[in-house]
Length: 453
Image 1 (tube, rainbow, N blue to C red):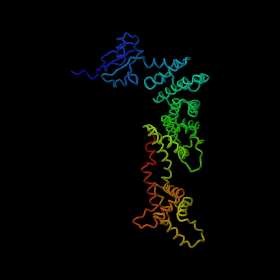
Image 2: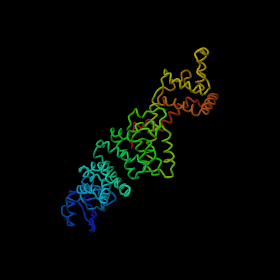
Image 3: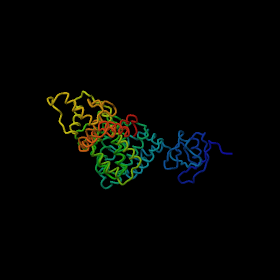
Image 4: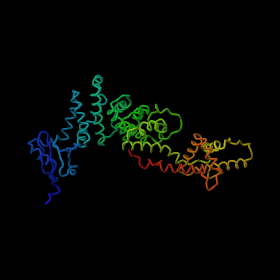
């Protein structure tokens, strides 16, 4: 007869002793099971002990997660999370560098467990770590040159513990000071910084931006794209990934007006990260990512692929405003773009008021607009009143005409002389192609899934 489903056979370890094979009753309170285990090893004060998984996670067993225990599991009797939190809280403040480093290593590992994290946070442990980052490490600055590895490790484990604790979402990101933000930003801006410290600092900045609108503004004011580009030009893919993640996060949280851009010449190296549209619109950033990330000899891992996808979506969404803007047939500035397309294609200047009769000029314009492939030969502005693709189609046509003039003229002239059944009119084709590309590239889809980071 099989044993009851509530009875599990497990092995329980205790340092310095042979593991115990025992049956545990899932109907019993967890405290009663721990007391039974402690009694077996003659350990007093069972309240000071807890059970945890004896695997790579080392997570504590609680009443909430005890149902995850399976037959044959290996558990470990260990110090209770409250006791462990108190011990580490005291040890990380040790004046001994070696003891402090060991405690920070253990804290960084233990903080992945939400049960431990809650106890450490209850001791105001987050504030302690912040103080250590802001000023606590400064007492060792004089020793940094001769003890640089130790200093880098301490800071790395401090930041790792901070990241792990904050990832549980127990306390708000809005509680952190400008001094702490400046300190983290300084680690990112330094030309030579321990890779682990840099990675954790980038992760902290990303989380700050994503979790607080107020912190977004403060972070964006502290760093420029010129300070982030060297991290993209390195060879560490993890750091490259976190750098792109920071750029993505800053753009996602940017106010709507900061997402719009014009074609003014902007030096992105000095551009504050509040001007995200200018940054993403520049070829320099895209070229660096293409050469150092996409064309790198290293295979792109899943997280990097996700961040690159996000960057692509954000970049394409810069065009959403134009995509959804109708042309105003009465707007002279917009009509001048159509006149420019005609001028480039047929090498003609806009006719002055006294150059022929009105009817003759209308006839010339209608003839040329037909050759350009517009649907409405009399008033081609009407072709751009449909959204999508709206004004974006006209923008693309003008860019092609100005930057690839020979190809533009050849396409227009070739198609204007073909038979109707073989024609591929430039105007209509450009409008449909723009619309099709926006559908394929999902321009404007960001609003439907705003938090995919």
